[in-house]
Length: 204
Image (cartoon, rainbow, N blue to C red; front, side, top):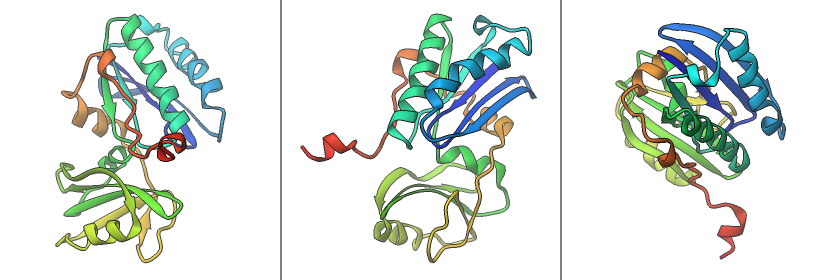
């Protein structure tokens, strides 16, 4: 089984090629507005380095948000197009939940992406099942949600969150793919999970 993982939802662009339980190649870049320029070349590079073509990929894992509106759209569009062109399935992956699989030993995991005075977050139990599925809300509501957790809790965030001790996100791609392996969908069904309304919509 050859799988390709794509994430363009944050400032870090990631392309990871996996065969069974081996990581064949990885391309990553931190940028602000260059994901569209680098995503397809990165895919080409990682495939050529392993003497593969897109038709050789069995399954696409695509992070479909929440996150940057433009970035999320880029990854979903490319992943959807490649999967459709090669008649393959797609696995949508949460940009929040993707980071919990590298952590163990806690009753709860809370993954956070800050957004000015608000935040995206998801809360998961020790088996990585959803307690609160990906959500976009105010800090006040977030604090109310986490106050209900009774047990050891690990908070994961790239940015500091006042009043909360956080650890930096890390990606365990093999555990992630194993967890999501049965959640594949048809390429037409893959949609961005923005959560937050884009600015134009918020003015209506």
